[in-house]
Image (cartoon, rainbow, N blue to C red; front, side, top):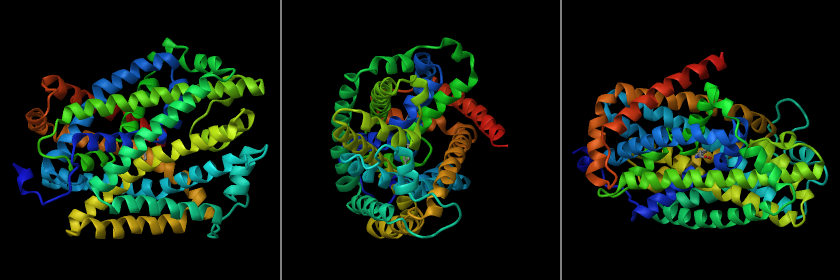
Length: 456
Ligand code: PFF
């Protein structure tokens, strides 16, 4: 068995340590600021059908697939691919490359969220949330290239990197697992408090109606199904190399499929909760401004740093609500960022045979230096948009390619993976799993083609 040849490596001491770390990676900004709007925009309540189909027939089966790859090879993405086929290693490096790009700009978003925890306390944006965010905070008023630092962004970016590298330096169990076990329960408690508060706001019901009113006709639109698969792949952190890396730290005898089921369902539960909380709050904002929910519904940076500040200003007790909301973004984002930085740290560690500390300092430190030099400048802030669009397109297209190659070209390895999973797991897989993985491959080809068409 290949795993016996693998070098001594760190482990998660328990399955729950792994589960918390994997949930920490999965539950991120995608759950809070992506899922609610994707649902609203793709058939509302009816979206739950393609979403659950994607989760059960593609998301969870692919989680099992990547767990098997990481656990069997006990290696990072490049090594895991190489162990399946010696010429497959570049696929792992491609995933590692995406992880590096995302890590570099993700730190900036974390930094903004950290700053906004403080800004919430005195509603620093006054009555112009948009002007404050882009003009005063990010200093993006002047067009053109400028490598001058924006100090208000520089300092929090440095703090984010100190935290991330500090946690990674502590190692897999004492760092990643221990902090995930603290951050994730804290995130759930804080987020539940936000959701309950939002549900008691006037207008909340209209928000929920806007989110959940089903438009079954939308199910005939292939774009809606693609949106469901895209959300599931992104949300479960599939194909960035993260799940391979985390599963490689599991002990030899670990119930892999059981863990996959817990991670998959917990992530979706959090996501649906976020949908309820965000749209209840948007319903309140629409009512307060005398407009429709459709006029205030949005996602991403616009939702968090423009929409929410305006909402916070309208709300009784807004400063505390805002502080907790941005704290949730920080906790959710930090555990995702830790997982993405660990991908290149582990990959290069194996490539050059260095220890965890040196690899974290060189690889993570290198990413930190680029991120600190680039992201807090006006140019960096403009670049973030491009990097995000690029990583998301290339990320989704790329992950499709990776999965197709691994599922299609390496398809004949599926029975081997299935035997590996069944040898250690309680939930046994059979031919259905292999069929589902194959169908997912076809869906991914379809997604890849549509992505390319939209690109050109
Ligand atoms: N699963 C994450 C999310 O839903 O936000 C996706 C992710 C994004 C993971 C960025 C890691 C990361 F750095």
